[in-house]
Image (cartoon, rainbow, N blue to C red):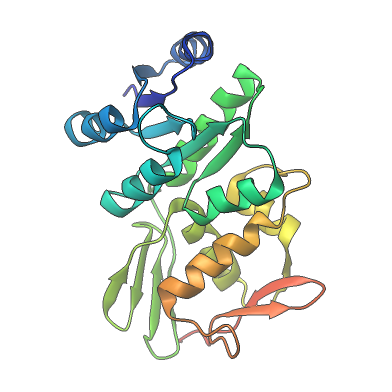
Length: 231
């Protein structure tokens, strides 16, 4: 089945190149220049993923990304000229699944889109992990997180990070290892974006930063999972 990609980009030249490469890779591509139309298309046409510029003529890309994640948690790949580490981290803090800086390689854009779609899809089989007498349950097959009986919505990347840690609770993972496992490649020079994802997961789980129950910071090394797995 052909996946539909929504490209939100106000530069016609960039849009033309991106569309050509995505269509060559087998995707159906919808394109809009504005954030408002993007929100309408997501509601009416239900694309599988959004490639989103941050500097749009009407709404800020950050506002569009935030709204998309609140509505349906659709995968979002940010494509932007905002290149600083702080801007990248801010993008991941909004829930973006990937972040590409202009000028960019069209082939890399296609590869990143394919990787995000693969991560966000459900698998045919998977583990179901329960911790602290059912306090937290992770269902790999459905990408579901149940906290005290209530469903908690995580992004695809957030779920992958949490599940990676929980599946091997005795292991301390470096940030580089979590990038490789959760994003499928080494995000050179910006492995600190993992910290933004960890912060988001902690907030959603209500995990204290001073005395966390599940996501433990191992200073100088990375992170490990602190929950006790149920038998």
